[in-house]
Image (cartoon, rainbow, N blue to C red; front, side, top):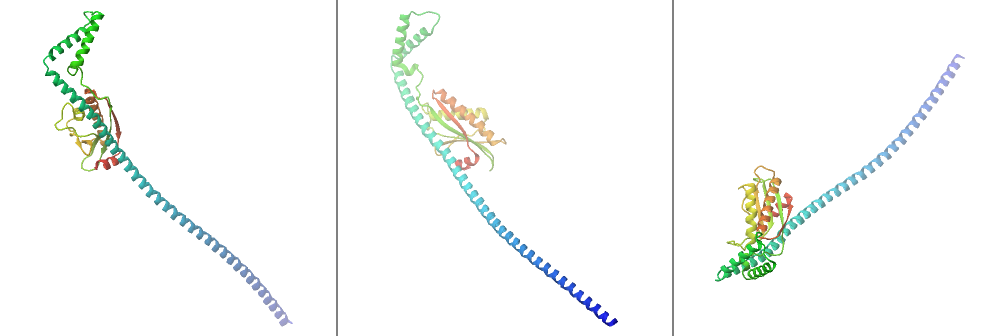
Length: 301
C-alpha cells in the first residue's frame, strides 16, 4: 500500500509539474506574442519616423535651395540697383553738362555782343558827351534836395531813355540769360585705399583756354574753388575734368570722409551761387549724397 501511495503521490506531483510547465509555456508563448506584436508596432513607428525624417530632409533641402535662390536673386537685384543708381548719377552729370553748356553759350553770345557794342561806342567821338549828360540827368533825378517840376522830370526821363538807347552798354548792367542754370551736385566720402578722401562732382564743360569775361563756366569754377579754399584751407585741390564732369577730390586729413565731403559740398555750392549771382545768372543747385559703393563705381575709386 505504501508503494501505491507513493506512486500516486509521485504521479500527482508529475501531473502538477506538467500543468505548471504547460501554464508557464503558455505564459511564455503569450509573452512572446506580446513582444512580437510590440516589436512589429515599434518597427511600424520607426518606419513612420524614418519616412517623416526623409520628408523633413527633403523639405530642408528644398528650403536651403530656395534660400540660395533668394540670395542669388538678391545679389542680382542689388547689382542691378547699383547699376541703375550709377547710371542715374552719370545721367545727372550729362544733364548738368548740357544745361550748363546751353546757358554758358547764351551768356557768351550776350556778353560778347555787349562788349563789342561797348567798344564800338567808346570809339565814337561824342560818346563822352552823352555819358556826361546821362550821369548829370541821373544826379538831377536822384537828388532830393532840389525838387524838379513834373514837366522837367518827364523831359529828363525821356532824354535819359534816349541816351540809354544809344549808350546802354556803357551805363547799364551787362545782360544775362533768362534761363535758370540748374545742376545736380553730388558728394561722397570714400574710405579705404591709401587715404580716405571726399569727393564733390557735377556735370560741366571745360572752360575756354584762356578764359575771359564771357566764360560763365570759368567764373563758376573760380567761385567754387575760391570759396572752398577760403573755408577749408589750401588742402583743397584744383578741380579736374573727366568726360564732362568736374571733380573735387580732397583728402580728409583724419576726419570722417562723409563729414569732410559735406563740408566740401557746402563750400562748392556757396561759391558757385555767389559767382552766378555776381554775373546776374539765376542758379539752382541740388545736392545729392552718393553712397560710397556707387561713388566707387562712378569714379572708379
